[in-house]
Length: 386
Image 1 (cartoon, rainbow, N blue to C red):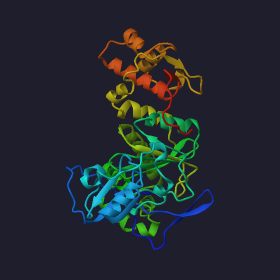
Image 2 (cartoon, one colour):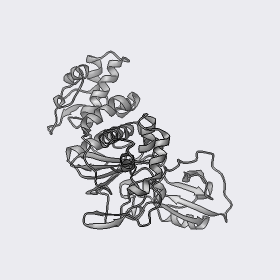
Image 3 (spheres, rainbow, N blue to C red):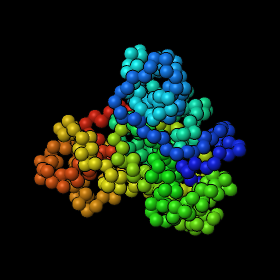
């Protein structure tokens, strides 16, 4: 079994994988990207060299001198999450360099903003499983501020979609979720604590010494930590399968705490190595994420200014009875009727400022994001896959 997040020793030959009948080079995984340096903006001598630029999708350009970097930026629309490194130091927000404030940059809508050239390849430092080539195109893209991770995952499951969902957080960390017929089969991550080896050590499954022993043998197992752990008899195969499933759950659940970021959907993209389904119930996983991870304040903010809009039943594939609500949640869901407003529900079902009010907002959030009810016109600002 594969652990694409643990960096193997440099291979003699780059592995290749086939997607949609095309062969491509696969970038090797490596440690996580450092986040941006949040120090105050500092000035850099005009003739300084060693500027590097990183796109929100992770592609690195450079090094340039200052004039070269300005010329690059002048051709590219401004995007959230752009980073710059100066003289080999930590990545920082592009807005932290006053020298770049006067660059005249084109204005382009975000969804059409990211060019395929930006995704032509990935740096070896991204820690991602692979990178798209010119034959791979994302069909949809957007911002998590506009679309919740709940609705995005629901749409992919509803449409039984197959492909790869890339999510890039504001600090540069990323995850890639591969789907097969609407169910996640593998998730890669650049967050250090989520790498398989550290995950197993933190859970007390293996020791640091055992992890190091497996890492020392990676070249004998094609760079796959999972295979090394099983091959060196550190972990039985059936236990590894269970922990990989648990790890996938945890990696997806962590997304429900993201408050900003960008997403890209690559239809039909396969993982670089064969992956067996891990038996993940995505609908239940999404419910757990909303209940356990998403902040009540974030859910409440989602409905801010919409308390007076009317609810309408969406005649689709699901009803409230299809959701695995608790008894108390089911009671609140049963009180929600077409034509009511959130304010009506607050006035008639729950005392204000109580835990039951927070539960009502959570139930309403689930019902609207699973598209069982529609609130007002609910026009989507961003086209969604699925």
